Length: 118
Image 1 (cartoon, one colour):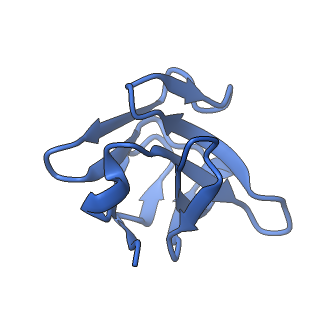
Image 2 (cartoon, helix red, strand yellow):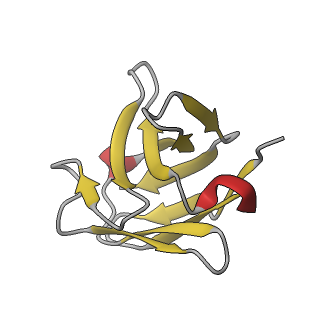
């Protein structure tokens, strides 16, 4: 069974930094697209950044220049380094893993809370 486990959320002041980690099952990690999504209170879940198995990266406009996503295939881990955090970055951050010929399979992590105080 595929497992996805996030860690690294917390409370930080505006302008601070946090690093989120997502560990996924070794059986599918190398062939997966892995993304970080954010869900703010009362809002829909939205993509923050994702990284494909070949290393191609996509960022939401709100994340460009402040966040960096990276993957370590040896550790089956994807990290999201978040700098210059703003109160509007507050929300629950979810790791999503997609795999399959047409990305038809996916698994979500349980989510980790990020709170940025002003």
